[in-house]
Amino acid sequence: MRVILHGGAGGIPGEPEPRQAVMDDAADAGASESDPLSAVETAVRVLESDRRFNAGVGGAVQSDGVVRTDAGVMLSDRRAGAASGMAGVEHAVSVARAVLEDTPHVLLAGDPAVEFAADAGVETGVDLFTDETRERWANADAPEGSPTEHLAWLADRFGESTSDPTAEASDGYLPANEGTSASSDRSARNARLPGHDNSEETSASSGRSAHDVRLPGHDTVGAVATDGETFASATSTGGRWFALAGRVGDVPQIGSGFYASPAGGASTTGAGEDIARVTLARRAVGHLERGCDAQTAADLAIEEFGELTGSSAGIILLDDEGFGSAYNSDGMQTSTASK
Image 1: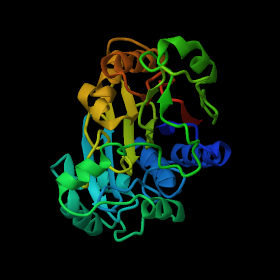
Image 2: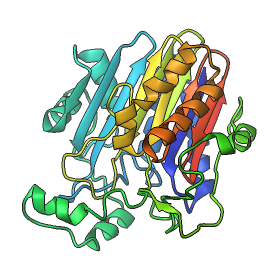
Image 3: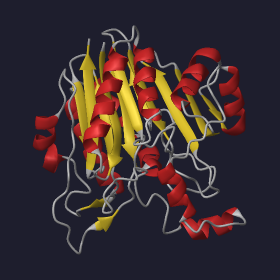
Image 4: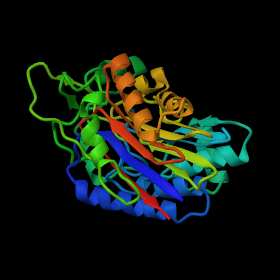
């Protein structure tokens, strides 16, 4: 079993070493599973339970003060399942798997998805707040009233930083000459790309100028696995801070937050609306289908994404030969394992 996972693209986390240790444990746990779907579910569940990641516990808070989780999974035979807008569900990835295995559908949403989760044996009613996120929300001067009033409040807040309470205050900024292309930093990323051992991939932008562009910080988690015959991909998130209540981003959308085909699998992270607009995961797997190796496909997809949107994202890929990883945000940690 080969597994690659990411802990989200966005700012530089304030606790990179502990985060990396959790990710390495998650990758190792996934690689110990007997099939790719179990591998990605197991790996992602580890991250969903850790407050340092914006998935499950510690997820972002929407404008009504509720943490809602989303996730999606897909196999290379194109079976897929996803769930979104779930309050009180820590392990969204397990709900997505249940949608794939137990229903004729590909996506369930909102309160009915929570009810389905309970029937499927996934714990519900979980307090997804941490001390840090509860304090941050308490200081947010949250609005009351209608969705229109919420929109006015979140106009300058939506996605303003990653959910990691230890992240640098400068997270979410990209130098103007780096925010639209992945190719300029390609050689450095290739040098850090994980092979068959657990490793860390983190990049920090250098000095910031008056021309720097403020982009929202992002964070989510995902994994891709293969046993040499089948690919599985999974992505899970707590969304983005201060989104309008009920907002759903790219993560549970097939081809945007996750995708798999016989050529390989992908999981994405970043600016969800923009990822959905360009179906980033499907775009990257399409490069695999056209004969690119995983690293080239990742680089091309992020380069195209930057050119099309001017926004920030990251992606992990897995094919028959190896791993691929690229991002144009300040940083993205990854880990791999093979057994």
